[in-house]
Length: 134
Image (cartoon, rainbow, N blue to C red; front, side, top):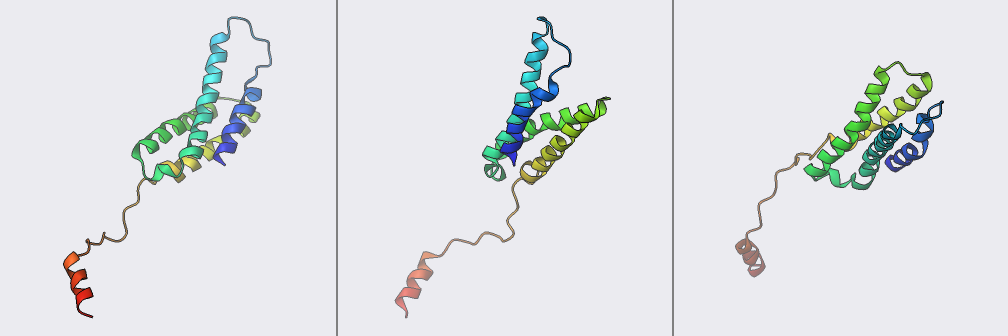
C-alpha cells in the first residue's frame, strides 16, 4: 500500500499542481519547490514501504519515518486550512488518512514490552547431574 501511494504521488501530483495559466521564466524557484515537495511527500511513503518491518526494532528508523511522514501530514493539514477547490480536498483527504494510518501502524507503536520475563540461563551443573543419574 505504501509503495502504491508513493508512486501515485510522484505520477499524479504534478497533474494536480499544474497551473491553469502559463508560467514565465522567473518561476523556476516555484517549480523547484514543487518538485521538492512532491519528492519529500513520496519519500515518506516509500521509506515506510522499505523499512516497515525494521521500524519495530530500531528507534532511529522510527524517528526518520516520523520526520518523513510529518511532511505529508503537516502539508495536508496546511492545505486543508486554506480555501481550496474541492478537487484539492478530494486529493489531500486520502493522502492525510493514509499518512496518519501509516504513522500509527509503524512509527507510533515502537518496541513492545516483553510479556513474559526472560528466563534465567540454564545451570550447566544441573544438566550434567541429570545426565549422570538416569
